[in-house]
Image 1 (cartoon, rainbow, N blue to C red):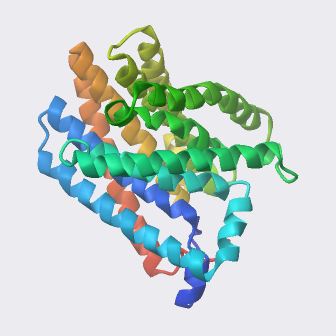
Image 2 (cartoon, rainbow, N blue to C red):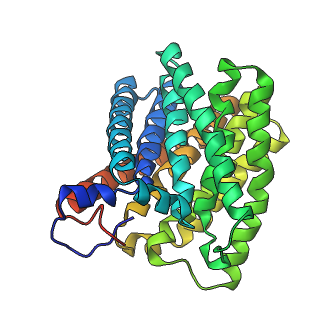
Amino acid sequence: MTTTTTAAPAPASQRLEHFPVSFFATVMGTAGLAIAWHKAHLVLGAPVVVGEAILYLATALFAVLLLLYAAKWLRHPGAVMQEARHPVRINFFASISIGLLLLAIGWSGGEPGFARALWAAGTLLHLAFTLMAMSSWIHHSHYEIKHANPAWFIPVVGNIIVPLVGVRFAPLELSWFFFSIGIVFWPVLLSIILYRLFFHPALPERLTPTLFILLAPPAVGCLAWMALTGQVDAFARILFYCSLFLLLLLGVGAMRFLRAPFYLSSWAYSFPLAAVTIVTLAMAEALHADVLRALAAALLGLVSIVVAALVARTVVAAMRGEICVPE
């Protein structure tokens, strides 16, 4: 995460040491946008080239970030271990595996072999990150209620992404295994986070964008449920309309988010909005509902603008030396 205070550029080695694992959230946002445009091509007739171009960009971005973080691991292993012990940053390790899973979804239509390899790597890695995070929470000596925030959903509830193409790449029971982890622990973590939000001081300013992560579990959960069951039933509707309500709830406080300064954590806006867009497109297709088609088109425009703005703000922050610096 970054600040908005302009600073003199640090030496390359020092910036590598402070390269945050949360940077992989940019892959989640861009890959999610690519999937949304792919789905919009099928449902709304959007140009297919847009989704393909964004998917190539997301794939290249992931490769660059992976090389940089691998270099950090080799040159500054202590800094990596420090992130793994950090009560907030530990959750963003799972953004690496989620990035792989989302890229697998994006490539599953045109390059199924490549997509299967990405999915397998992402699935195994995500299970490891889930175990790492939950073990840290259970066998801890440093967590306090103030550390609870929506980023806690990433390593555990992120398991519900696995079935989206896992139903095509592996035995069905494996997808049910990962879906069960995410859907059971979602209400558990949601209760903890809402308790923290209701009865304790507000989230730090730099973590405020993570409130948008609340959108992702019901939206992706609905998509996963539809993939597993092949139908839109009552439970799918509950998850879908829950995601729309949360979108409305966050929309009520939109000015608070618009006035907030840019942090790297601002990328938390991107993937959840993309997830809501994708599930709205899926529901519009399944229910043949024109009102949902119109809503999906509006959401696609919104998330496209948000991601474009985040890319621009990230480039500017990098040029000013505001990224990859000590907190």
